[in-house]
Length: 126
Image (cartoon, rainbow, N blue to C red; front, top):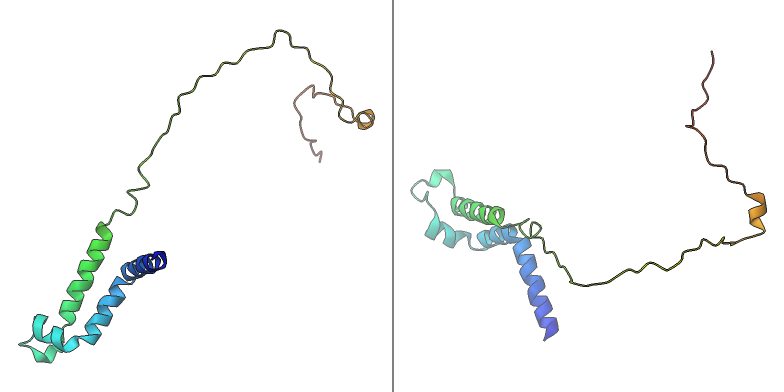
């Protein structure tokens, strides 16, 4: 059952995607009946319309319905979720800075001196 539903939904998406191609395919398959029933230029056979006017109307209608669809309407909606919670932060009674020694052997070769002024790149004398 789930496989049938997945195939059905995939077919619907493909039909929506290829709606114009489906209209042209339908026109090609039923050209004579469309010419007989819907052609506006039946009285002027020299135009050789053959129902292309009806096809153009259908394509225009499909394009208009696609442009009226809310494409970015979902992106404008913003949902904020605020979870009410209470927490307290208590400071320790005494805070004592203890020196941390991660690599005592490497600290012998490392020296740090804070910068005493603003660094200026060397100027080039000409």
